[in-house]
Picture (cartoon, rainbow over the protein chains, first blue to last red):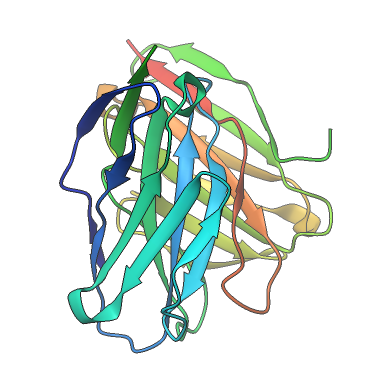
Length: 117
Length: 114
């Protein structure tokens, strides 16, 4: 069975500090996809990034960067120079690629990020 | 607005009543998912449709829950004989088939069972 663990339940930082969110996953599949979603106070989940299990290149998008390490089953997310608007709950999720149907997402418990001005 | 829409946004009901939620996916998306999110937790998968066919159901989906997607467009999720433990946010998501594409989520329906 697949599982996603986000050990940090809440992180509080002061604006302009960097913040790194940890994500550790478990799966028996060799082909899978990893996602990060943001859930702001309004409640709607917003897609941030998708990576497949064969692409271990780190990625940077503006102030966001992702570090995928297959050897440790981790897919960590860093927000550089945080802003108050980054305050939200961030979810890591896993989807197994070879399922007959569904490609359902298995989510971690989320990490609440509070950025103080 | 061409995103995923859900109605109602909030529903308060008394224990034992039936409730129905509606989800309208992005028009060209043939895959539709329902998830449930309780306070402080991540969303949990409930069920999935490919066009009008319901292809997978979680064991979380007891026999009091039923979902439909007639004609492969909008979907409804009905809960019969609601219990206080059903109180949660019910999220709908849609995507295209042909790979593990990102799912686009609606704003959710928050259910409170008194």
